[in-house]
Amino acid sequence: MATLYCQYKALNAVAWRKCEPVVMEASADTTTITTSPCTLAGRIAFVTGGGSGIGRACCQVLAREGARLVVTDINLQAAKHTLTLLPGGQQHVAVAMDVSDRRSVEDTMKSAQDQCGAPPSLLVNCAGVSTFASILDDDSWQKIIAVNLTGVFLVTQAFARSLLENGRDSKGAVVNIASILGKTGFAEMSGYTASKGGVISLTKTCAAELASKAIRVNCVLPGLIDTPMTAAVGEENIKKVMPLITLGRSGRPEEVAEVVAFLLSERSSYMVGACVEVTGGYGM
Ligand SMILES: NC(=O)c1ccc[n+]([C@@H]2O[C@H](COP(=O)([O-])OP(=O)(O)OC[C@H]3O[C@@H](n4cnc5c(N)ncnc54)[C@H](O)[C@@H]3O)[C@@H](O)[C@H]2O)c1
Image 1: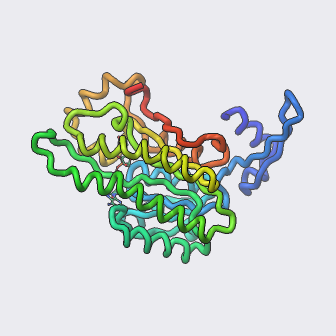
Image 2: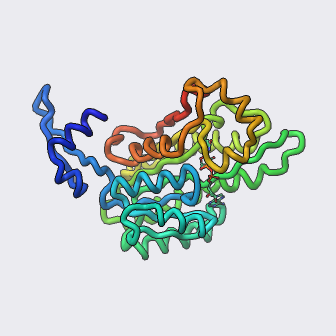
Image 3: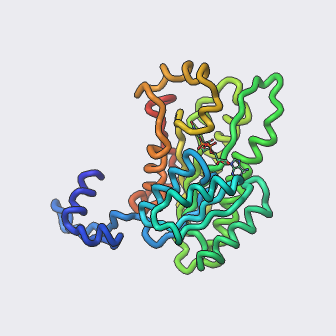
């Protein structure tokens, strides 16, 4: 893909700057490849948990790719701060939303559509919480499932309804941020790992159901990524995990966000129900 990027850049620097599609002839046969280096120009992207960490990085990368952002977070101040980091400042909006509250989700989706003049056609379900506690005395189960799993369900439902009812061109894409721990499990994280396992299977079910309606759904399984959530895990726990990471380091939020942007773009047009691991080799 890097080679293609360079070719496109060299072939049509003007189109690159304007985010216009570039058409080029493939060398080996007569196939015409049509794509755009700014892959999301003109699209409206709705991001949950956009006020911090991976969600914020997703907003930054999607804005760089030309999307108009609806940055949502339970923490409005944090979402507003994300806005200040985005190119094309005025066109983006920040909204307070609790993913675990159906009313909040439905109202926010409607207000996003009103403010942008069209329904969002891209969605990143990134909001999440985590806790550490033994299954013997953990009482955080309901809260974690409500945010990490029910939240993904509620936002995806509101997004799909809004797009299918009101989208002129209803082609859509969804990326859910699960976790590699949803596949591997992890001691003292019962609610978290179960919620993320649920997100993986929910992704596949939504993918199967929505593909025929031109909405592709995929998910990303990050490993250990440097964010405020990880900082709360504590150095001792991080030290235990580090030797299990093949690359020997934690990831950066933008390393996840680049994969999210790819999955939302037409560059991944044949990917449906995929779970892409972004882990530096942990848990493979
Ligand atoms: N950091 C990691 O190592 C890692 C690894 C795998 C998966 N993830 C997942 O990535 C996602 C982002 O995590 P992060 O590391 O960037 O964490 P983070 O704490 O930096 O960001 C999470 C964001 O979600 C928001 N949020 C929390 N509850 C919410 C709610 N009810 N409604 C709306 N927003 C809410 C928070 O305000 C915060 O801005 C999460 O789903 C997390 O489980 C993170």
